[in-house]
Length: 122
Image 1 (cartoon, helix red, strand yellow):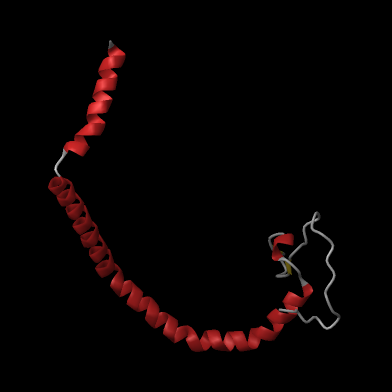
Image 2 (cartoon, one colour):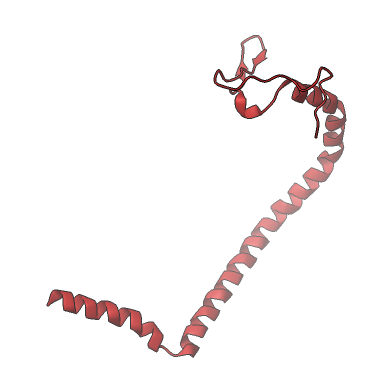
């Protein structure tokens, strides 16, 4: 008897939304959509000052980043010629004297540079 009552209740709950008029369902969706729009507008108005400040900071940093890339580009290229896949290396270890050691994983495959010049084929 309890199983029949539970089945009847479950069936009633699933059929009830089907019996509702399309206008009521559509109105509910419209209200939810309008609420989501209002939420997004509020978030954007709250974030606008922070985004503007970030844009200004990035514009100020552009010359510094460009200079860094010009100076460090050759050194970075040389570094890439001496390592293969960074996944085969452990996290950097910082020594008290300021040295940084990046150890290769013991189970990493043996790697030999492609050429003696250190050029990388892209």
